[in-house]
Length: 348
Image (cartoon, rainbow, N blue to C red; front, side, top):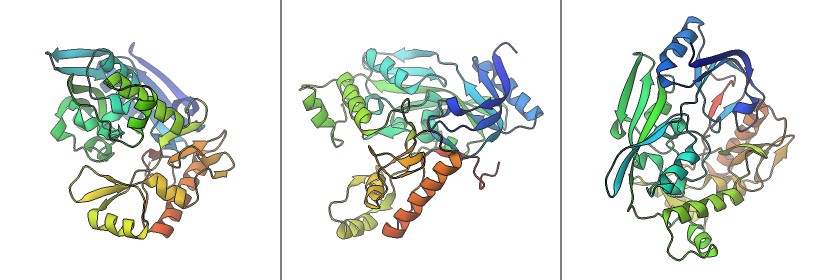
């Protein structure tokens, strides 16, 4: 099939930002979304499980993946409709997320600026419900176009059908059911900027910006992220490895009474608040820890790093040690953000 490129026994070292040297049973690249059903049928004929992979910025390969790694490279982006203040924009799954942020801002559409410089592809953004600096992508998603593997049909799901939650979605809970093909975003040219996240106003002031635009805000956030997070082009990492724990208001108050000054944030949901996973990890003594080539970043305690040739199993063992340590000290169990594949407990 002309729209497919298939190869067997492929290295994944260049396909995940943690730079784990795992291998896949096969890899298939799709340039046209119409070829997706045929690729999945071929995998079914070969009795291979399927993993859809974007930039590999939200996955840890704790071992080899025995199935087919499916990569969608379709990256068209266009405005479906617009008026003086609103636009509906469709981006295909293979487009890089930060390229979409820049594309929309260059055309004057506000909304995605707080999520500037997040790694990954458009296809991955609704699965994790990515977010940063007080914004989540679910706020802007109008429709997700996806292929349902059970029915063998393409389907359009409105925002309410996506089951979005904090770093969660229907697509994440039903990970083997859906393949994201494209996402439609509803953006507002006059949407007020969100600048109340810690450090943002100070960064804008340091830039000499008194009346910031969405472009200025995106630049400020990109500068903060560049300073705080290690560059995956230089040091293998998957960004924030642990979710901020969401706890009931009463539990948050008890936590603050015991640990005065600990950072606590709104969760966006009535009756609950978020604790800082980075603070918990740092207080437990893990920031800057290194065991061979597996470590916790000196720049940010949320970031698990591969300094060279750490295996996925070694990185997972370190992450598990952090989780256990934080739970012993604070009674709070952290959850990883990335999808973990190839571990002994993995059903595949």
